[in-house]
Image (tube, rainbow, N blue to C red; front, side, top):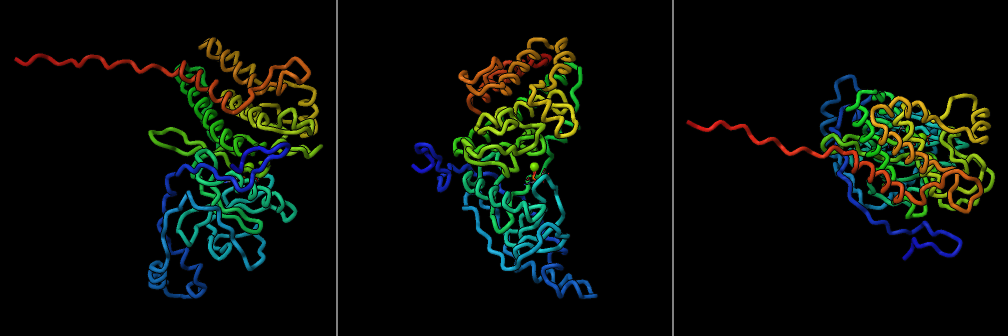
Length: 391
Ligand SMILES: Nc1ncnc2c1ncn2[C@@H]1O[C@H](COP(=O)(O)OP(=O)(O)O)[C@@H](O)[C@H]1O
Ligand SMILES: [Mg+2]
């Protein structure tokens, strides 16, 4: 089957991923604004364009997003500066900008309405023309990943300097961490630990899938993990921003890519990266969920890199000290878990005496789930109903 590793190289193209269907994106009711802007005439009308709107609405084909279809290839006739779009602009004659959603080091992301399906989608484009090659690389990664996989953002289409993604309506893990600080109230502590372990276990699920397809993310951080509310209030995890994602082992020498704060030791040293790079970064994310603090003290990038290369440990101590009195065993168990995820060495053969990192996302996830099973409070049987005998 394609997708199997061949000697010395990985074939990540032409894979046949096992699709798992996702719930369709919610349909957004059409609004007048869409129609005003798709029809230039409507913009100039003094009278209310309601009539026109109603006529146009009938023409709009409304379909659900099909999460099992192929990733579309968009061809755009007009060369456009996609980095400076404003509300109402049309991208590829099809995606109408609602607002800018966010920007990172590489991309600008717009919330748009797909006028073909009437679904809300996001369009990512490069912040600067020089960064366009990253968008191309990210598109290739989505093609290797395939579509419709839970825990991985769904890519709908790609085009020149643009990627169309499902709109993940929720909060970034960064906000989750800021908004729900850890406290030393025992029940909150336990809930918090359960939530954090649940989230990281789903991150590992997404990573397992990507790694099976020969792709590593290499840029995991709380910004690139989005949370939505799933069934019964459970957080659903979506990993976004596969911009640095690539086939591994990565033999490109010497380049340190990604954020120094979350870089693995091998990334900092400019060495090959592999699936264990993602495990290291996931360990830092878990640590941050529990401490509420960034893993390393902020300083200039150069100082940060120098300190990290000299082996500065990340901050778990504060957390361990504060929470050990509440539940010493659990605190130590989780600390050991994080230390295994962030082990300095990737295999026994590597020199040094640091811990050896988990070998796969599956191994890490099983370790997380074992702890979860042990701490999840066993539902106590309902007390017998208190029925007074009828006279
Ligand atoms: N599919 C999406 N749904 C919702 N928000 C998104 C989506 N993709 C990106 N964003 C928002 O845009 C920001 C920047 O996107 P990202 O892909 O991380 O760009 P960069 O590569 O520049 O970091 C994200 O941190 C997030 O807030
Ligand atoms: Mg990002």
